Image (cartoon, helix red, strand yellow):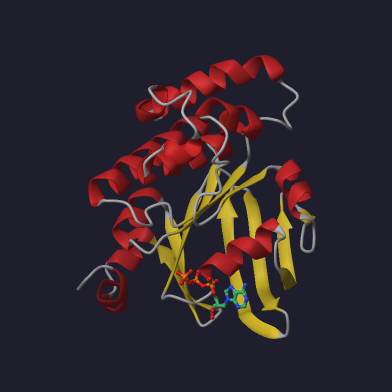
Length: 237
Ligand code: ATP
């Protein structure tokens, strides 16, 4: 499979403070890759380096072109949608308005209404809330909206940060089941940061483990699930 996204020896800084020091990973076109690691390991920062919201060094290539240092709006226009930790929906706007805004850069205007219908089929809970303000939704519904809004941009790559954060286990599973279906039906590639490795391994084909800002281990989901240190650190024994 063609490589869609490739990071080589990526570094990143908040002001003078270096928080990434050699992150390397690649996401095949249509593939799904996880990023595992302890709190503060640099998972969120890796996604920010890709989407252009933090200063980065090293090499970041998307679809054959160097995108390191590209502004976030340009990165989005190239086909990378970022669902940040904390979801980033527009609270004062309705569910429908959030979905429409997700599609604002698209030229295929006629396909937008059917894509909204698809989102509501994927996340039926959003259907009853279509005219509600995003801020009035439950945490799970907000997460669903954040994913649906990113889908509405018709990206080639989705950056997903901690989609299970703060959700009840059954809700988190619902969200991930829908994301897996979206992956299968859309072919959108995904780079997934997730504390809950059990959920992540249901979605991704492979994963990279970060330790203090550096990639230390990469393997398929099956290989990683079987390793003792991964089980101890991320799978509860
Ligand atoms: P978590 O799961 O806790 O979000 P993470 O692996 O996603 O962890 P990052 O959020 O990428 O880790 O943070 C990496 C390091 O950068 C941490 O030491 C963190 O304290 C630091 N950091 C994060 N954001 C900032 C910021 N805006 N300014 C300064 N330092 C930051």
